[in-house]
Image (cartoon, rainbow, N blue to C red; front, side):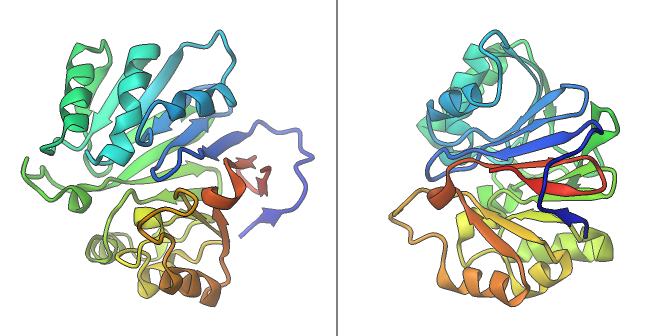
Length: 265
């Protein structure tokens, strides 16, 4: 893995920011050509403030939004995003949730002018400049009543030789399934730990296969779930992954030129 300590470079870069939205996920991506993608939006409107740190004030467009699954701490903030920004494409799980947040998200989705797509394996989202996102899971049309975490999309962000693996809230059973599909190609420089560092995710075999240099845990400070769990931290430590938590650091920002990766914040 090409991990660098300095960000002195001249080549076009991809930026990936894991936003501090409390107990939830939100990941902002900007490609070398300026295309932008948001994966999940946290629980509430706080995502708007975080986006304001990474986008210019006059920028009111986001090319692609991906809702990994319909839990409130992933889609709640996307309601405000769809109201505030002009979104080009919106990918979603196609799975139902009996919650007010899901109902509000569906209302925002269906009234938005964004082109709506149900997430499917091997979908390639071209971000420009050689950067792209590939969907690894789901690999089939899911039942509308699939348990929401079981429906979590896996997304692989790729630029040159550098990869970021994003797993939503997928449990170990789905990690094992995706590992069986992908084999050694699952290895990535950065892994977004599943389910906010819960012991239901980040299984030992999966982490060993991904072999990340960095493990990012998106969770709220002093959250009532006890995330991240001790077992998960021990697993990452055993596999030499540096753990970066939004609950301690705030936003976690990476930049890469496709051959090296820099931790900016």
